[in-house]
Length: 138
Image (cartoon, rainbow, N blue to C red; front, side, top):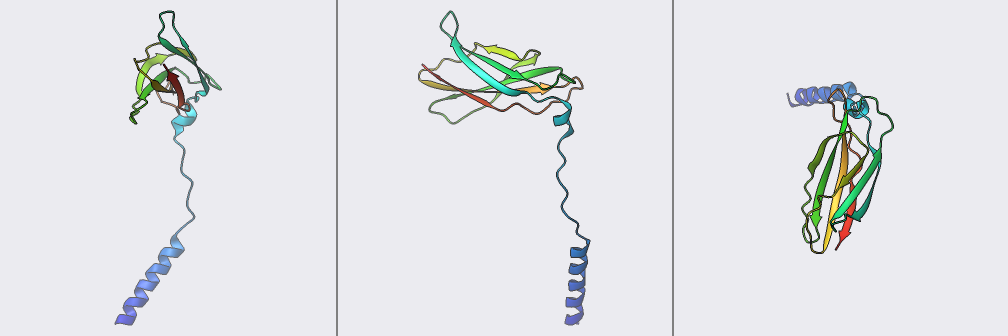
């Protein structure tokens, strides 16, 4: 009886191995290809006439096909904290240059992170730009 049990388990194991196929590649989300991705994001930091910091972002897209607008997302990190939380600063933005003069008050060093998220005319959200980190020192 023990021999039959081992034989059946071995047969089932062999059938399982024979029926396995090669792994299939993961399918990329279609909305990443439907909406053009913002690339070449750069930043320039400066001050306003009132002495506040301002950051000018620039980026480009390879195509404007199915491109409706952008969301600009920003996060602040103060020198002594490790918390970084992104919040949408601007929604429904249609240009590829953005000026941010709403920088929080800080006393020493502040890191500001940005990324741009595209939205298509078909309401799909495309792949985000790379995240850009800017260091501001008072």
